[in-house]
Image (cartoon, rainbow, N blue to C red):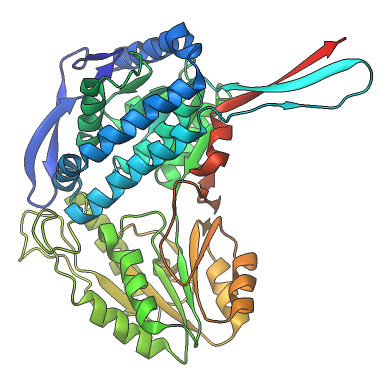
Length: 476
């Protein structure tokens, strides 16, 4: 673990094994932190926050440090992608793209570091009134296993740009790429002072809970499932610690009769079978007009049947394994339960035990005739399962899309400008993508409504979380 600028083991010496989910082999061991280690990390972060080498640093210099961190990330991207593919099960192609996106995010917030501004405010009388935006403080970042390095960098970058100090806690299944990245940053001598960025590993239940409720932590950022988000929010509420929660999703594609079905089919497959469907913004519901239902389903099945499935580092593979065999069994159990309530499997639906007996592989799955009360329509499976539902009227499409407890990303497929914008306006979600899916950029807000979360990742809006407003009044 990287604590206080040093590489250390757990205080009690205990480690845990890390697996390659494509074959079940142990590929590493990492420390299992204790509460003593949590306190050490928080103390080091607090010391670094108060040290003039960071607190008094010219914001432009913070930006230059972030730019150097981005350069290191680009240079190490292929090595880091190899580590991430082995540890997570995703394809090398996906991992490389995601890590380069993380470097881009560092670049973006490097440019924002010296543009965090307050304001002067007109008030009555002979007074000068102004506001300052100052760093939130010590921030804890609880990182998920589905995009282990990209999602870590997504929140680390704005936190550092704002002048905060960071404790990053990777998922216990997938800690290796974040540790390897931190090692590369440490060795590159980017100018980042010791203790400003730390990585602590171990049990999410123990370490994540301890960070969320710690008196020395000023803000908590979590990407994860809804139950975890609720638990972290409850713990943080004990000390009124602010949180950013990016949680689940049940994204819908709304496909109208005039849509480009070939483009839609490719995007539908990419949006649900990329990363083996283990994405909060996955387009797991296909809500398609009855006139083009059969044609689009056929196109989706044709497209996904061309995707080679196998270990992520194998040449030409388009879909890798799920992150763990236990997770695959959870997805299969939910699929079976949903099928008990209706639906027809037109492609896939099984574990790939014969082809990969020790791996966590599952067939990409397409299920048609899914009713809106079926759990395949309502619940997040977090796996490669597409639920297809048809509609006849525009109002039905909108109602079906909004009939979800989640509200992260939805897609609209049509050539009609007015229809596209009406849907974008009326969909109950934080993001809408028209005629492509999924898509995001470091400069655009990644945000969910309803059970999909609280707060904003990415974009300049994300910086607001990492700063506190102070108002100053001067009687002249």
